[in-house]
Structures are given as C-alpha cells and as structure tokens.
Length: 134
Image 1 (tube, rainbow, N blue to C red):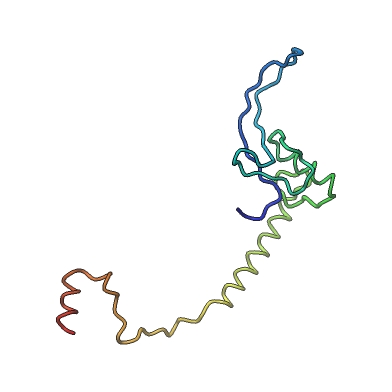
Image 2: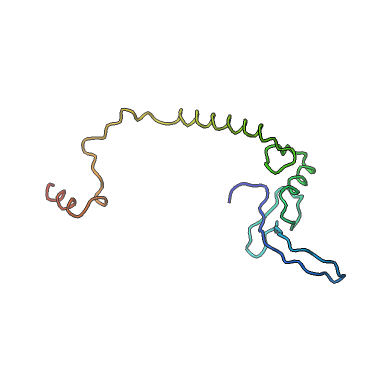
C-alpha cells in the first residue's frame, strides 16, 4: 500500500426504517478502521470509524481541523483550475528536464562484435548451427 492519509473500505448500505420510524435512505459508506481483514485507516484522526462517502465533505472536515490548503484538490470548494494547470505544466517541465539530464547518451552506441542473442531466443535450427560451429 502507498503512503496516504485516508483509506476507506467502501460499500453500498441499503436504507430502511429505524425503530423510531425514521426513514434512512440508501447510501454509500466508507469504513475507516481495519476490521475483518479489510484495509482501512484515517491518519488525520478526524473522520471517525465510518462515514458517508462524500469526499468534498471529508476534505472540508479535515481542512477545518488542520487549516490545510485544499486548493489543489479538484473537488474542494477553493479549487482553481487555472492555477492547477499552471502548476502541472511547471512540474511536467521540471520532470522532463530532470529525465533528459539523467538519460545516458546512446547516439554513438555500437554493439560488440560478439553480441549474439542468448540460446533461449534462438530457434532449434539456429541453436543446432551454433553448436556445430563451436
């Protein structure tokens, strides 16, 4: 598993009627604690054990608690698509430059004269001819 803040085991929960007559609608829920072999967790510590699956509400809840900048999360209320596109372009340019610097120069590569494919890549006839030549 990768390093993340929140992992939820998500499922559809059928609605119904509570004992007091209150109607509960169908909904999607996320289990945020590990149970019965299901991987889950909330490193923020503010979402609880289970929560309705509403990522916008999750981000708002976490931001209230931590005061974090959520401007780079597409479903957050303060998301700025133009600013996000500018940052993405800068990041892509920096990654491309770093990759170009790290790549070895193979423009004058010449294989060694004895470079031959391994036996496993040869047909049976080619293997036989190589054995006879040796």
